[in-house]
Image (cartoon, rainbow over all chains, first blue to last red; front, side, top):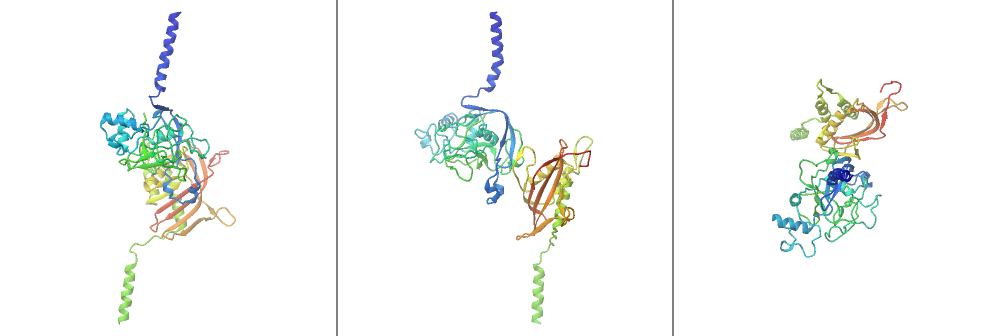
Length: 261
Length: 192
């Protein structure tokens, strides 16, 4: 009797272990499930009809139904403390604004910035991770709210009190605002984030529908997520689909990153 | 004597000022029919015995001859997993679109709307305007009919085309609008 109970328990454990191994996210990361989502803008703006801006700027259209495999994404943006460990381990160059190459006092939990795309890529590699693709980033920011304009509401009115680090004088400590539907913090607001993809204005016209990796080459890297300088303006930087870009060599006060796996 | 010399010089300088290459005459009806004919010819290719697509590049090239290198186009979504207008910048992107139409749709039958005062058939209804910067703008209603190659489902969509031609006859701006997409079915074995 006892032997059969032990055998049954062992069988259950053997069956459960692989499942647990698949679903348990690495520390500090969140599992984003496999599946389809609409990437890009599924809405028209009034200004679209007015033709008051070059139509060619509409880099977030058409929206495409994209399938992504499951992946992990850092719960928080990379902090100064995280980056200091990377510097200590690799001898990498500190952000230029750090006094004597040390983290500014009391800013250990503040999102790191003034790092270029190459440095962000090197950090993720050092951590056994990689930068997310632009498609992964957009699926993640939506937090399960497909075809919505904003990450924090189901309707298309952002509300007066946006739960994100925007309209600030500087980057803040990560996790200062509630997470999105996937449990990710600061996807909108705080620092904008490097992605792995090259930026192409017209990429969405013919993008692959499964695990898109971005254009093969380009001049700029895609940067996503409104930063601490943004407000609720007309340009839509706080929307889930807003696309930005930067020279991968440039370091900026408003651009940081997080890693994927 | 002096006056005749001056007149000769004036006439000679006027001749020199003329452009050396003759501009094509842009006829709105001809331009509309040519555009539609080349579009309808995109299904004019075949599969070889071993299943290779033969002749696609030729029909795509034929269509692409109409476009300037720096063409800007706006077209409807070109597959069921897209939503919203598609901007195409440059003839490289337009070629991708044309190539996709050629390979994914068959039995193309785009028709320019015709009309008489009281009948449905008659004159080609092509509207035109000389462009202030040179060239010609034309627009016309179309009825687009096509079948999907993958499952042979047939669709019909009314729409409109707006094209701006440069003085050399190449398309520089292009917009295709399609609406009210309806699936077409056969009744009593009638013709499609």
